[in-house]
Length: 550
Image 1: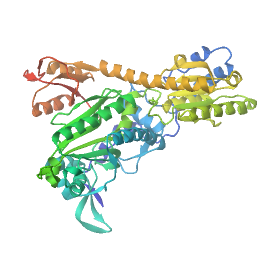
Image 2 (image 1 turned 90 degrees about the horizontal axis):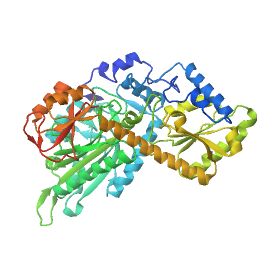
Image 3 (image 1 turned 90 degrees about the vertical axis):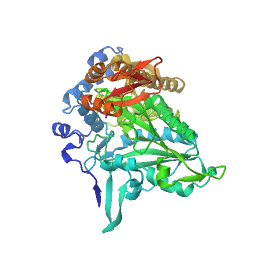
């Protein structure tokens, strides 16, 4: 039997106000928003070259598809949370699980997670880490050994008290994180300085009994990787913690096109049981902050609690110095919220499950075979070049419906092939990130020597464009402040506030209580010159970033 130390009220889970307003929000199937703000319309069709009559007719049918659709994606500007839930449902990323607060990750959503895994797995191994796995059941006595750890996690623990029909002698914790069980095993594996450093990672699920949940962002169970390392010195542990937050930062910028701000957490926000926590903070489309990844210098807190020691080079017994670091499926939610628009998802090519979708267009049955053969040939050429390609050759839906559907699923590039394209041995290519005729190019040769480099170049352009767009959005919504009144004004307007800070933990909690904002981090990149704390007027060595967050 599983129980929780503190049960949330059922009505507080999964944004009940949204569930009441949109009861079918996460139960829709293949629904497309009418009149999407993607710029594709009869007007853009009319601006096409005169020799594309079949495509003009198709654009008209596409507008009709929108009008006929009776289900919508809520505009982001109208209701960001409702938009987010609509996108997750319509793009087939996830669905609600039968237990409140849980979710089922569907294949398309899991494919994004797999792209994250593939990149990070390589980086972990390049930095000397090995994958392994620890049990998800942890003796409760382990959690109790580190005082701040149990205090920090007690409200979120799920406990097993009955197994095999009998009450257990000791209740078991369903893994909220693994520092305790890792240390139990490290104590058995580490004996000498020759056993160090010990650096491992595991891909696993985690259970935390959250009070308020949101698919991908905060759920009772989620997927993550958690790295754990043991070192002979504090300096080595600190170097490791910084190295791993740098790995996460590069992933965010280079793969997810999210310009995170890396820095150190305040004491109040530091992980329970750590001496320092480093973080990457991402600005979402509603300007809230998302803690997208963390790396902790655990010092000797856990090694002292568990007696994890080694004999050093001069024969003295020493406690090891440790780190832990993690990134989770929360990052999938971050990608959705950072890049999506009213039409749905907008995925960076490097994490997109499908980079190119091919939509064949025909009106006459006599044209069908030639168009499909050409589309299949183009698909094979692109797949051979290492690209992730989908040919939508189903005939149950119109091309216009397919355009809307694949835009909503965030596919970076669309290739259209009609009878006239077959005759001219060319294709039409549309970018997801540039709506309307501005993002559409006609007459790209099907010749592999031309098509492949062109498609790869456009995918690189989209990746870069999404990052630059996110950087501009982030920078335009961070306000430099020098007083508490300026901070409150910035936060109340939905922006991030950046200002000098040297006040107390109590003052930090006061700011949170009065504004709803927390210190997201003390950024690694700090301005030069003398600083004065925005709250106390005392000298300050660092600026901090305040924001409301998920």
